[in-house]
Length: 214
Ligand SMILES: Nc1ncnc2c1ncn2[C@@H]1O[C@H](COP(=O)(O)OP(=O)(O)O)[C@@H](O)[C@H]1O
Ligand SMILES: [Mg+2]
Image: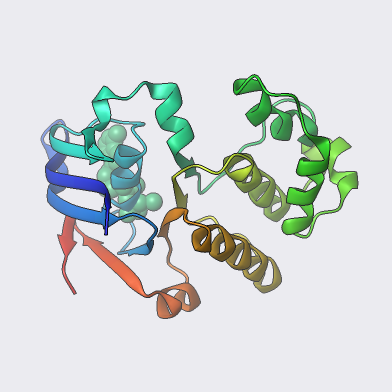
């Protein structure tokens, strides 16, 4: 199997505090990896490094065989997409958020595609013209996830994205992510959700900034 990420001797320090310590990790293309560990153990920090939002203090991160520093930041963001724990919608309407992925790629907006995607997460087409102030937290989370997936990246990193969702909407998100994974998307999912953890087939654990093999 092909490796999509290779992390070698990665450290992340802030002042004198070591937040990540000698992380060595390989992730195979197409996997659905669940990342677990106590709060404050360094999960989000590692995910932000993989998404190239922050740089490690030392060590190496390779994506598709090349150091992530060698990629152009905009094209890297389209390959490795990070879905935040606390998503924010920008601008005034849901439409602006879902047209944005087309605009950055200089593509004609495909409204039918946007509607199909909304339906995938149980939102009907009336949501397109809603104000960002009139959608609930759970709806925001799903709309933000669509922004990540309208043009599927190679890797999707989800950081506790189902934490604020009810059981029904969790299930909708699980189904959608499973479908994308079956079509080849590599997924790294940070979660504290017991159901998600017990359903996980591939797991990595981070504790006090270190990768635990279990
Ligand atoms: N830029 C930063 N400055 C200082 N401390 C940080 C910074 N980023 C993360 N930390 C600390 O690093 C630790 C790990 O944080 P985080 O990666 O968010 O953990 P997790 O996602 O596992 O809850 C925490 O103690 C956090 O306070
Ligand atoms: Mg976190």
